[in-house]
Image 1 (spheres, helix red, strand yellow):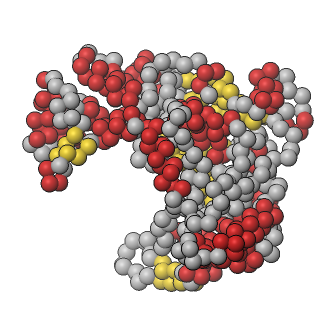
Image 2 (tube, rainbow, N blue to C red):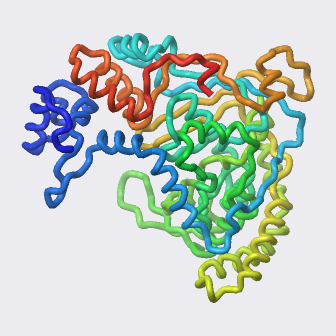
Image 3 (cartoon, one colour):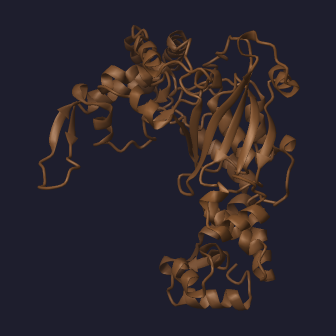
Length: 477
């Protein structure tokens, strides 16, 4: 409501807001944080004098309605699927056939090291955030874990709730080596290691099957505890190849704009077939993501290793993929997509179903079988607004190549295929607090002298699922 909180501070903030001052301006005038200001402005006037929620009000409301919104979002995304797509397509069986082993991963929140901050900020993070060196987690995980499952695990480990977009990226030097060359020549690396944006199948949220009867954390935990089976379409190698060829057909000529200084240069043009990968990024704004992220159906054993394969060797293996099925796959795909665009009563369901089954068979047949790991480090990005980034480092491998496993915890992870956190530094963070600096502001307010402000901020944090409790590592996952 408009009068949710009332205190001398809140009245002062609202008076300034009524004068047209922004949250940033009010924070500067009163020498308080922007988070504090927004906490006292649950609603602000918008166009036509209608209440317009501030970021803080929306965040609080979003978590309190989390169960309902998760279920509603899952249902709405199902409606985006092309008509005729089976409700539960069995598209990709588990791929790992090697003897299972385990990996020790160090997950460190970037920009959270105490030596990165000013002394007063570091003291707050250390005293109230429980940080000794940096906000980090050490986890032992099965080698069969897919990157997509690791996404949910990281959310659980750091206190997020799968409420924002995310991606996994290679170290930049490796990515540049992998994508060096003309787009059509290096196309086979997409669907092999990387994911090309898909404009046909809107299946980014293919596993968003949340049910309102579960808590979001219980649901997230189930995602990395059960056996992984990819049930989307857009990550398959054949699908990536067709998407790239379709883009080349639609945009045979690319317009190049000079980024150099000096006299204004006339834009030039290059044929798509002659364009480098970097030139492809120049003129395009991809609506469904950028082509610089890893496909998340990759198993950890297919991307991480303490003895990674040379990137040029791995690239050569990708470029040697058999392209013989692309044409046939595209023909069945065209039939399926054309049927999906027709009204339900006017399309031939048997033809569309047959086309989709043929697509599935070809997807499995031509999917890469022996993907070689190329790095011991990855970057995970979450919530592009707050800009959270987690550096993933492979520290140790247990039981690889059937070696004996002396570590009891690792042996249990291998046997049960159940990840475990063995060490942590720092309490959980939370969604929508404004990165690490916003988290520090929040801690400062909660533990500050103004009891009313502290109570209000703690109430908001609890609404985000944050308790401030020091949970033991074994209880995190």
